[in-house]
Image 1 (cartoon, rainbow over the protein chains, first blue to last red):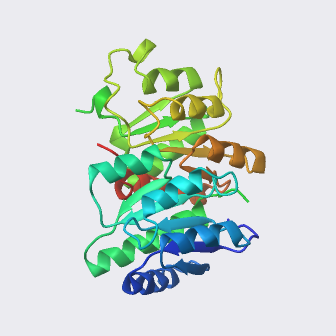
Image 2 (cartoon, rainbow over the protein chains, first blue to last red):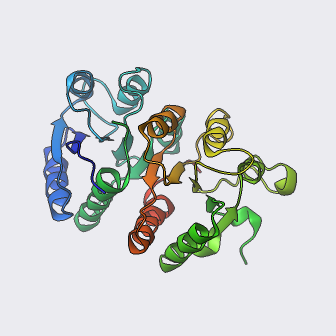
Length: 139
Length: 147
């Protein structure tokens, strides 16, 4: 079911441990994708406006340096060049206000990072399989 | 007992074979008891907006996900999606297109209207069941929606 396009995932995450864990979880889940990482919101926006090919999905943390995740989402959805890219918020926040705001801005999915290592690992693998293999993104 | 206000997955599908396969896959994940199946776009909108045959339903009891086919009798899937995503009361409900169309036009149009995910129905029986199980688990358990 894999498209011919290169599978690229953009992870927007300032915590190096979480980024490393994501990398390993995807490999374990046999998701054959290129993982690009942006360490803050400004870098994510620069990346999205300049990179080719566009990522199939963006995994976006909410608490980020420079430009926070909510603002990144708002700008992705406000720009015709990036509007249709699937965005999954992956965060430790369970706050109803954050969940509501993200859906209001048009997030595709909102997933809470499990605190335990094993569960986090499993969830990231499931996310990778779902968004990079099962889901079809616009070209 | 499951009542109309407990529905967690709304399946909008007019093909009886696809309905049966989908239900069987969801059954495996113990998700089948909270599925409601409707067969055209009119019924889907009546459920979602709690009107017509579903006027007695509480609109605030939102399903966790709507699995929506594109080609439907009466009102098609694009129109159902568009009405849901343009209404404050229903735009937060995740919608997954589950369709046999691989056309880029359909993919792009639905994302621009705010679809949450787009899944092409696998032709092969076991791949179909596998895909529906995965998406049932994803939207039924992993994804978080506003309460």
